[in-house]
Image 1: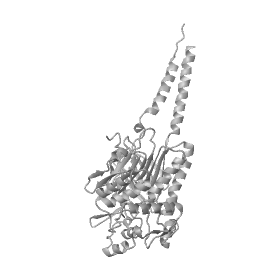
Image 2: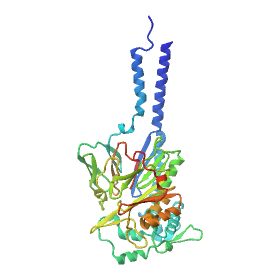
Image 3: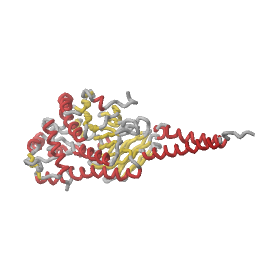
Length: 332
Length: 121
């Protein structure tokens, strides 16, 4: 009788162990990465192994759609509109154009989707070269300005008013939102979407908070802080990821639509918001506005929080930043 | 003669099951030693950080050279135009990756307890 009890206990233990391993397998994290939208997009999510591949494919398809339609590559929907001086965009592109024009107004023009002419002039991606002359910049500025874009009365079409749009500072955020929506629609609750500085976190990593590091703007290989973000979007923009240097001067990729020159004074901006589209537009706006005006913009658009690191290394934060972006438990 | 409740074979089985149980509770860090993660257009490779060497990765523009030295890595040469990836410096364990977007190559050092899940950059 005694031996039977011992073996029954052993059998139950074995069954419990097997169940534990099976459920652990089901909860394993999956990491998928693709190069698109001019960046590296990585999904980390928890899903049943049999569904994970399909779920990742469907999520990446959303980002691919944004990349295909909203980039300025030959043949894209945006390129066709730019070439025609406007027109009737599809529903997704219209949403992004509407949103970009709203942020242009809200930021007082610090964020502006009509900077395509300036971006092409500065050609930051091309590496070291002499910066454009004042005359060249003035000419590009004359073809810039969100107020020149006129929507039709029904809001479905746009006349670009002689400007060309570049949605690079907002479309990536829109893509991150669509990817997050796709994951949620497939029942995924625990995930992290990382589109090279545009991040969306949801749920947790097996009961532990997601850990998101912030690159040191003057030593980007090192992390200056590590956070456990609240559910939502976190976007960072800085002068160190895309820039060129000429005769000892660094020219960053974020352009001030008023001066036509790279924004100066801020090394890095991190914005937390409920969605990545808004966080993306605010991050670019804050690079141009600087700490004082930038934090005012954040206060006017809740729920949003921000951390700025100026070029002297001084940190400026909105009052609630520490609440939505607490420092990682191992760092405190 | 009275029969023993647990004989040596039973004891061995109990010990085996005990270790099977505690295995999943051991820390993640213990299972994930530092490694070089190279992501490119064709997938992801996890490679040892030793010995010191140069790794060639082919992308759409040509060959990106990754130098591995003293447990760190950096992009030493790239066919891209701006060479930002080369100037981005070394990659440390748990730090931000070095990325060559034009040639679709990303280099990071994974593993360790403090490794973040993503880097804002």
